[in-house]
Every structure is written in structure tokens, then in C-alpha cells.
Image (cartoon, rainbow, N blue to C red; front, side, top):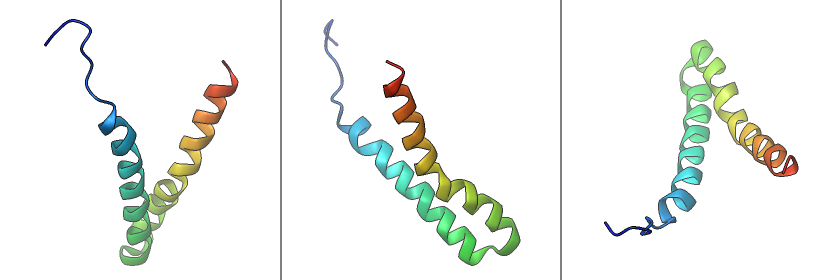
Length: 63
């Protein structure tokens, strides 16, 4: 690998939203299929996109 050569940002730009979508989908499915144990996981999984957006917004505001 040459000095100064960087990996393309494609996986960063596409990978993070795919992981967030998968986490949210698994939370919704857990709420529907797993009963009481799935309820606690689903709250965190479905709330994670809101938490991530709030974290990113606060990080940008602090600059």
C-alpha cells in the first residue's frame, strides 16, 4: 500500500446506515416475536437511531 493511499469511504457511508437499519429491524421483530424479553431489547434498538442522531448533532454543535 502506498503512503497516503486511503481506503474508499464507500463502506463508511453505506455500512453505518445498513447496520442502523438492521438494528432497528431486529428491534421491531423482537418486539413482535419474543414477548417480554424482546420488549426490553426493542426499546433500545428502536431508540438507537434517535440516540445516534442526537449524539451526532451535539458533536457538530460543540465544534
